[in-house]
Length: 312
Ligand code: AMP
Ligand code: MG
Image 1 (cartoon, rainbow, N blue to C red):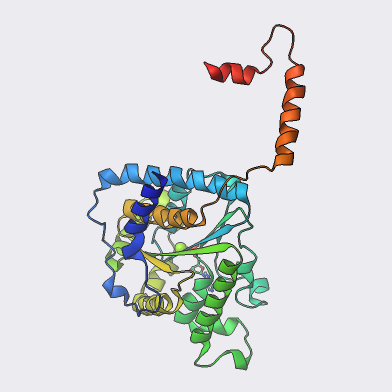
Image 2: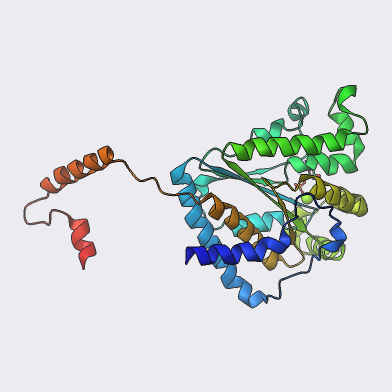
């Protein structure tokens, strides 16, 4: 049964995976793709995914040997916040840590570019979510070269090879993490330019969405083609066997959320965390404690009311 679920999920997400070593052109990915699914059917599927995540997260926390880093990248209005809200709605908040990365602070700029992300990595047993991630360092920083200048790098760290070097460093960093028990899961919410326009208009027209919009978002939209190029190159260079990218069609929010849940569930299923089974000695201690507790039972009461309740 569990195996059947796992197989279905693996099959579902396969078309979204960027095959390591291939050259990606984002124009080949359709933001409106929905695997022939109807929104109506999607509701139940997301619920299944959410409860599966809850189950696996509890096991991940109990086992306490592996951690998961879930990175979300997208352009403005791509749906990162909503995806996090929906996909993680069933999991125990104690086991999840969400970090959003904005324009770096002076302190952050005073360190190497991976520093601020490293500080937010998951502990064993945890899922850490990166709302934007270290990939901004080869996206927004690439599209706006003045941001690279602000990083005050020495001459030797700049030059034409800077992006290829960053790809390599990021790949190595993720390799180091996976080798040490931390699975790195990466999704890119792939939004069309037209759908971004629609969502911006909604943010302008609906008062409760106004806070989400800034004039800078429209300025950033002018760099659309540059971003598409930067994303394409980044996906080609950093989809690795140990940490592949998934391109999630994002024009339909409901479908994007199912995909995100499925990709994360797939990673957890692969880890296959188990509740620890206690050793013989601890088991003997448990049995001894049980006898003591039973002996304390008030007169006329069952020695074990819990068992009595559950026997019926
Ligand atoms: P939002 O996610 O809408 O709150 O916006 C966060 C802003 O921070 C976006 O405009 C990002 O482009 C920007 N940002 C995130 N990471 C970096 C970075 N490493 N360098 C410069 N800007 C960044
Ligand atoms: Mg924004």
